[in-house]
Length: 191
Image (tube, one colour):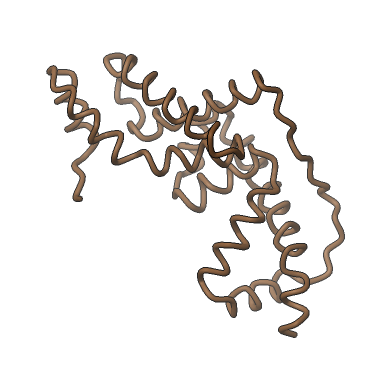
């Protein structure tokens, strides 16, 4: 389905056409769910966060001023809902050692990754993201998988742009280390 610009749907909703909100949900539900899943790391919780965020967006839509894109505004709501759920449940956050030993140079890792089939790449990247703390996985997902800019991530997370850059840098290092660990046996067989 070819979607229209978000503002078209918002204008229709504000004029009383509630069904247009369903189109907004359809347009953003997959990305919204993925953002929630990266943070809470649990399918059921991610579904709850996504649903709650859409309900919250529905109720607050008349207050949407359009200063940011609708998607940025929505993903900020999702991020906040997910963080609230984590605080309520006090879900364990897996820490990751920044100083993990690196056994393969980044260039060699990239070369070997290129040899893997696309599906296997996605599998390993998703596995690596799943072992990162929620905020790290979310930063990497927003930037690389969802093509959000530093400014948009800043708006979504409520962090300053320089803080986003630092967190993204550290998250990339942790992702690299996680990929190194996951692919260690795979790459040794290829070399």
